[in-house]
Length: 174
Ligand SMILES: [Zn+2]
Image 1: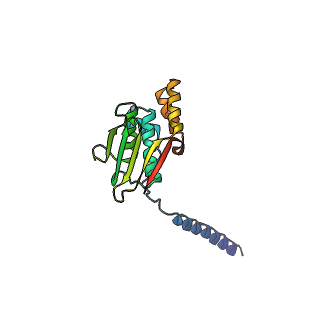
Image 2: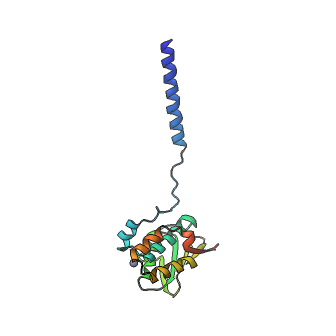
Image 3: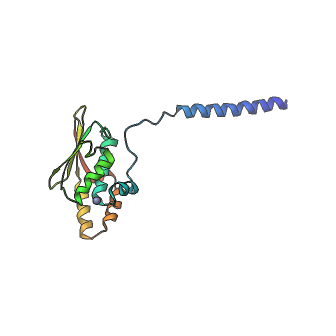
């Protein structure tokens, strides 16, 4: 009688273990969507040397393009940056390179001078892509922080915590 009881406990435990294993194997292998892990202050400082609003904006634009708009990372994409070509606003280009893997060395990121910031991300295979601009809210924030002389690092940190949807206007080009 006792042995039967033990056998049942053993079988029950085995069933739990097996179902756990089945459950584990049901979890699909993490699909490589090409999306980089979310941008962090440490990563940007390591790459760019300091944290500022424009390197953060560039990184967040790049993340948005890669993570939500099917732009591939490193290869097979072209990034055209229109914007001021001197710092601090040109720091945007470093954020873009960090997030997209499109680099000056590979020649798949280009910059043309312009007063207004506008970034075109394109898939090389289909030509589809997006154009990203700063939202009116983002522009207002930058102006306000400038007027209040908020520290540059602090501006960057604040932007890191604001969702991309609030910072950017996106036009999709099929
Ligand atoms: Zn900078």
